[in-house]
Each structure stands twice: as C-alpha cells, then as structure tokens.
Amino acid sequence: MSKRQRTQVGIIGAGPAGLLLARLLQVQGIESVVLEARTRDYVEARIRAGVLEQGTVALLEEAGVTERLRREGLVHDGAEIAVGGRRVRIDFRALTGKTVTVYGQTEITRDLIAARLAGDGAIIWQAADVAIHDIETARPRLTYKHAGTAHELVCDFIAGCDGFHGVSRSALPDSSRQTFERVYPFGWLGILADVAPCSDELIYAHHDRGFALASMRSPTRSRYYVQCGLDEKLEEWPDERIWRELEIRLDCDPPPNITTGPSIEKSIAPLRSFVSTPMQHGRLFLAGDAAHIVPPTGAKGLNLAASDVHYLSRALLAHYKKQDDGLLGAYGETALARVWKAERFSWWMTTLLHKLHDKTSFEAQMQRAELDYLASSRAAQTVLAENYVGLPF
Ligand code: RFL
Ligand code: PHB
Image (cartoon, rainbow, N blue to C red; front, side, top):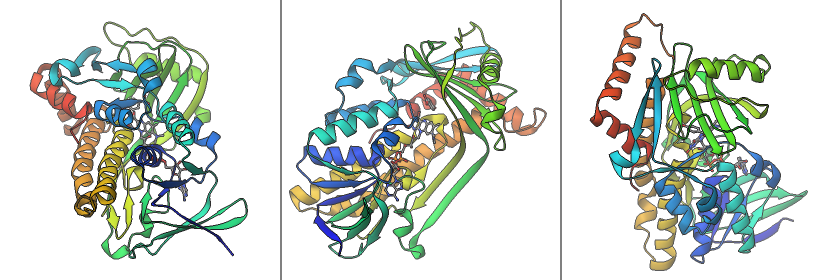
C-alpha cells in the first residue's frame, strides 16, 4: 500500500526553478509539494551560477527572498572584455539603463529553501524513483519512494524542474519531442577561493591559450574559470597551475591584481547548448535546465530558469484565480521565444571568446575582426549589453 497525498502543483526538483516556482505559488496561496532526489546539504552546497539579471532579482523580490541579496549582492554596472592585452569595458548602465547583480546560486538556493520551510511549504528530500503518471488527464500523479515507503502525490499540475539529468523531459511523448543540440569541444575548469577578486567587475578574456573568466562571489571570495580540454582531469590542474594560467590569460593593461590562495572548490564542466521542444504536454510543464541548457559564457542558465518560472507561475495563477487557461496553453511557446534568444546569445558569446580554431584559419580572423568591432562600436557593445542584462519578460 502506498501513502496517498493531494496537492495543487507537484514540483520535481529543488533547484532554482523548482524552489522559485514553489515560493511564487506559496505567496499567492497556491499549494505545492517539492520532490528532490538529493539531500538538503547537497543542494545547499552546490556551486554554480553567479550573475543575476535585473528581472531575476525582481522575481526574487516578488518571492520575498531578497533581504540578504540586497545586503550582500554586488551590483555591477558593467563588465570587461580583455583581448590582445587590452581591456574593453561594456558599460551596461550607460548602454541599457540596467545592471546585473553578483550573488551566488548557492545563496539563492539557501534563501529560497529557508523561506519555503518558514512558510510551512513541503520539500521532500531524498525522494527516490520519482515517476510521472496520467499527464493527459485532469488528475496527474507522481509516485516516489521516501525512507523505504512508497508514496503517491495526486496533483492538478506537474512542474518538471529536475534539471538536465531529470526524469521529466522523457515523460513527454517521443512522437512530439524534438531536440536541438551543440556540444562544444572544450570545458570550463572552475576554481573558488577565499581571496579578494582581481577587479571590481567581471573580466572575460580571449587569449591564444584559451578563454578565461575572472568572477567573484563577494569582496573576499573569487571565482575563476579557464577553458580546458574535455579529456583533461582535475588532477592535472593543481591550484598553482590554474593560478599561473590565469595570470597569463588575464594579462592586460592595466593588469588585474590576481591574489592567489588555496582552492575551496574545483570542477570541470562541459559546455553544451540544448533545447528540447515542446516544453509542455497535457498537465506536465518543464522549466529551467530540464528543457534547455546554455553554455555558461553569457551567464544565462539560472536566469532562463527564472524567466520560465515567471511565465509558468503567471499561467498557474490565471488558472486558479481567474479560471483562465489561455496562459497555460501558451506557456511553452511563450517561454521558448525567450529561451531561443538566450541560446543565441550564449552560443555567440561562447564562439566569440573561446579558442576554437587554429590561429591561421579564416575563422580565427573572423573572430578577431568581431572582437575588434566590439571594441570600437557602441552599437555592437549595446547588443552585448542588452542581452547580458537580460531581455525583458
Ligand atoms: P538544477 O539546478 O539542475 O536543479 C534540478 C534539481 O532537480 C533535482 N533532480 C531530481 N529531483 C527528484 N527526482 C529526480 N529524478 C531528479 N533529477 C534531478 C536535482 O538534484 C536538482 O536539485 O536545474 P534548474 O532549477 O533548472 O536551474 C538551472 C541552473 O542551475 C543552471 O542553469 C545554472 O547553474 C547555469 N549556470 C549559470 N547560470 C546563470 O544564469 N549565470 C551563471 O553565471 C551561470 N554559471 C552555470 C554557471 C552552470 C555551471 N555548471 C556547473 C553547469 C556556471 C557553471 C560552472
Ligand atoms: C560565475 O561567477 O560563476 C559566472 C559568472 C559569469 C559567467 C559564468 C559564471 O558568464
């Protein structure tokens, strides 16, 4: 016998998408249950994104979770591109009137979990074997195991917020599914260290030895990345080698002041562009990495999860408060229109800044010309800035 429970929205995954959706529904009086495969400790320790669009911050505000973000988040008016030893500043505020906020995904996750639990919302940690049933009916169900007991959750709607490796995407019928994908022939090696950042703003560097990024989490915590080969292993990258490589790739005028120190986290992530369509079927709706992946170069992944959740929460609200299902029916198409633009931007910024081709090739000359154009054209800088701070939603 399995234990049976009832909720309005069953949410799979306690990443930013699932937690933010749960919270936006909660503040509107709509009930949900979040099923998460991992432990709370694991979810709260995951190091990922760092840059929030202004629209994402506004959404977090709506969710009532910005108290710490307003105190600790770093508002950035611009970012720099370093190429050929030269620094080019892209002034977001002057070009678009908008800014971005540097605040770790880890912190957002902690804030969302704390708010959810303080508001009596349920998160089932270590929910195993989550399976989706009856999405073409008015009573879709989720089954799962928890602490050795089988459970059944009867819902009005199911939100698949379980990331790229989740189960939701494959619950959509194969016949309607289409995937679009680009796998890049390199990865990002990331290092987190408790040292002061080398600059007040992020520096994206294009270098003959490969791309590098200087980012941060706080005035005392830095996050750096270097482009690496897909077959490279973490063991081949002791801290000293990463710091040396960063010194070389980020070398520009005026020189950034890189403070080195022991790493507190190191990881290698492959880069991928991926979109799965449609984003909905029957009463199942996908949001975030469950439906799409972007390479991290444009800092769009978490922000796209937020805009999906914006559209989905609005649609669920219209259903419950106005008995209007128009927005629910249009959800996937609405979300995808924005997703594709972020895919384009992330792909463009990735190909602009990484070492992709032999120095003597035609493609490398095109890349150099494009970087040169960006350095000298306000119009080109505006295009970058408008996309980086986030297209409206
Ligand atoms: P997540 O965060 O992967 O969360 C999915 C959750 O679902 C759980 N899960 C399941 N739960 C129950 N049953 C199952 N069968 C389940 N399968 C999975 C997982 O345990 C997890 O808790 O997806 P979500 O919520 O869609 O959020 C997406 C973002 O996490 C992601 O797009 C960003 O981290 C991407 N990203 C960045 N995005 C930005 O906007 N700005 C950035 O600066 C940025 N930098 C990055 C990034 C991603 C990176 N990596 C590691 C891929 C930098 C890096 C290095
Ligand atoms: C980060 O700080 O982790 C970060 C910042 C900008 C990016 C990607 C990652 O484009």
